[in-house]
Image (cartoon, rainbow, N blue to C red; front, side):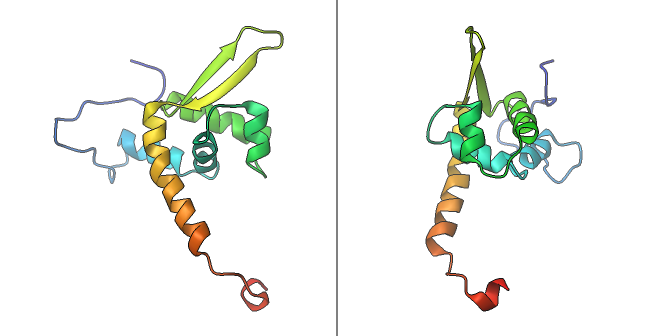
Length: 126
């Protein structure tokens, strides 16, 4: 068994039952749609980034939460982690093929929201 989510085989043409609490796909959806998971995937759509570049691109995320989120997404097979043997080690993160496939509709969703978001008025925000 590999580290991370327990993956069970599903018959061809069948899907995981995401409404079942033990479904591995449900766990992955929770990871992808977590507060920081979405932002990491969208940030990496533009290309590989080092840890500090990711932290700077995602305002408001702490180093601890970014580290935890990256560890989870790497374990899920959505993000790859490459360590260059330098002193200190340089770590780069990028999307796997599966990660790109998952990030694409998220990026489309955010693009639609930012294009169509009505301007906020003082009455709506206060």
